[in-house]
Length: 145
Image (cartoon, rainbow, N blue to C red; front, side, top):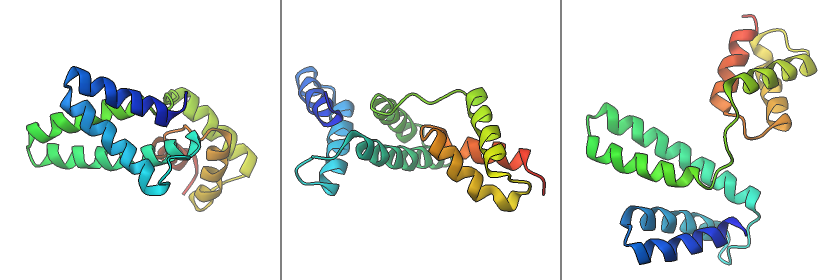
């Protein structure tokens, strides 16, 4: 079953159960797909990229809502993030991320932080489900100034 089929089934179920937050979130995800391809014929890898981008923008919005002391908005965003995570691949552990970063540093021959870009390219080739922010921070710590 493709992601778009799962979303369509989720929309039907949310309508039946009258779960408004889930319904709105799933509709938003579907609209993200339809904005790129009107027939929703995107491969799952492209859909996941779209969802990751949307997930990161919602994460930033959550941080802003918490900073602005808006718990009502923050709670809604947390609910939306949980729903989106159902469609994203499971994140790998920080230990596994560190192992991948070390492997990428060894493969690229990186010595300084100037080589960070080449390290990150290799990290994403090895495993594209790595948390990019965490990988970048780890690589920055491991590389000399």
